[in-house]
Image (cartoon, rainbow, N blue to C red):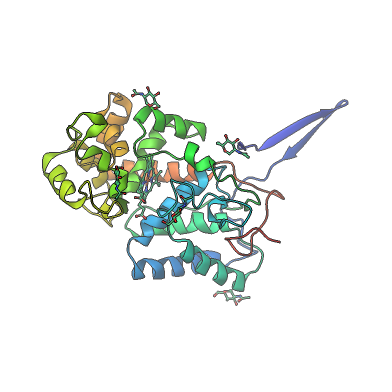
Length: 326
Ligand code: HEM
Ligand SMILES: *[C@@H]1O[C@H](CO)[C@@H](O)[C@H](O)[C@H]1NC(C)=O
Ligand SMILES: *[C@@H]1O[C@H](CO)[C@@H](O)[C@H](O)[C@H]1NC(C)=O
Ligand SMILES: *[C@@H]1O[C@H](CO)[C@@H](O)[C@H](O)[C@H]1NC(C)=O
Ligand SMILES: *[C@@H]1O[C@H](CO)[C@@H](O)[C@H](O)[C@H]1NC(C)=O
Ligand SMILES: *[C@@H]1O[C@H](CO)[C@@H](O)[C@H](O)[C@H]1NC(C)=O
């Protein structure tokens, strides 16, 4: 896996030769595409006005892109006759959405400044705008990522956290991409918006860990509701709000849910209910302090957006986000 590398040096004879890898900057497109931010913002708003949930979907797209070989828009590549990409891997198939919105934005950006802006950067800006339009915090997005020309279609199965992973596994997967326990908890707060299919949490509802009973940490009224919504023989793609208190509003209610055993995914509730005192304390902190949650979420989003970017002359600026340039 690529690592962040700002400086790489080579000792050649007596001369130390160093190549400074380009770092992401907030001003990257200021002269090459000054209208970029306003184009993305307008079209993200349009998409969210059409469908509120799209904010959540675009935020999640950035996460699933960044965890797999870095934020390089590899997730956006369609399968071809010869290459199976990330899109149809189990964690993404029929689950990650919003690709059409990115296509619309990319077309508008290409029309304004062609062959200049990467798909990976568009996804990063769209995620920020989605949080902002949902009532959450804003931040300056670091830019200058380039797009992958290769894809590993099995990698998502190993590196993307699963909703049935235990907390130890989730912490390990975050650590593998350089993210801390604080990042695990603050970024899980992304589940303050959006939906999940029954298939992602129905293991908790009837026969948890083959115990013959539901997950004991699931609050009883919520359990009863979910058992009706997600019956064993039902449609596993039925959608349920990740944050039942304020499903489309970006706030800290997600953490209050966890304190009252109202977390939807096992991976959500484990932040509070497993034996990890550190994640539990962070849940308490974010539940008590919306501003601390906002600050930490922003810091963690910037860290996540910095996972192994392709910069300089690595990769390419894709013209169509779904296919590698020919
Ligand atoms: C901590 C590990 C995580 C796990 C196990 C996890 C798991 C999931 C699952 C299973 C879903 C529902 C998918 C479906 O039913 O199709 C989901 C949705 C979502 N996730 Fe996560 N997630 C995690 C972290 C994150 C992070 C870091 C973010 C972003 C900061 C995020 C943002 C979202 C959003 C916004 C949705 C709703 C998407 C929509 O409605 O289209 N998640 N997540
Ligand atoms: C992805 O989902 C589609 C539609 O449900 C299905 O036909 C296809 O087999 C799935 N792909 C993989 C690789 O599981
Ligand atoms: C790009 O968009 C800006 C702002 O809308 C506009 O002023 C400019 O003329 C556009 N450039 C092109 C080449 O379309
Ligand atoms: C794809 O990713 C997996 C998991 O990270 C890794 O084990 C495998 O070697 C990768 N395959 C290729 C061809 O890089
Ligand atoms: C967490 O899951 C991993 C992988 O399935 C397993 O090896 C480990 O024992 C589990 N840890 C706990 C505390 O349950
Ligand atoms: C629904 O999910 C459960 C648990 O994951 C699974 O056992 C069942 O076969 C699924 N049902 C359908 C109709 O896919």
